[in-house]
Length: 90
Length: 171
Image (cartoon, rainbow over all chains, first blue to last red):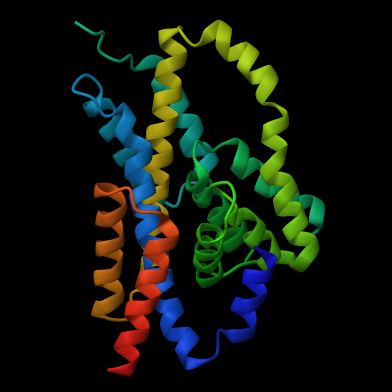
């Protein structure tokens, strides 16, 4: 990892490396976007999707819109998770 | 910033996340927004390096440590990455006794949902930095869809995206 970072630092001004990095950085955003969905997907069932969507959307709004610190958002989600019970399986 | 503080901030991120990249919002808040030890570009580059390296998911934390404080920072990042593994056994004992508790399951799922929301929120500033034209925007879309719809490894997505960007430079 350190060797790769040093390579990045040594070469990031070269126009070819800048071009390659632009593509790689865009891919990294795609990786982060997909990781959010992949994190959510196993828990996204007919019984739980409303709760999961509301919590994910609420966290997004608190963080992106109100710049709330992540630790507070997670603590609030835990509190909501304690009181807002999932629909029991029928 | 002292190495101990860096280690503790990275540790806070690793112990409160549920997959490799869900620690990103915490790291961005602490190191980019609050302490200005990193830029969004460096954080994004750390993700590229971490995903291109062999090894466990979440290895980008070592690169984050390096960008923040050089080699000692990389070591602090590595320690923050492995420390949670040391508490796995007591956690497993606790989990074995309580995993059936529906309230605890509800709390865990709520925190996972919140982690996903936080991970999405971090994409806004990183995408703002990465989107310099239509090609990076298309790359983000293609990479996201490829990773969601197929089982392709992230390193191939990064390499292909870099290659396409280089080809566009030559055209």
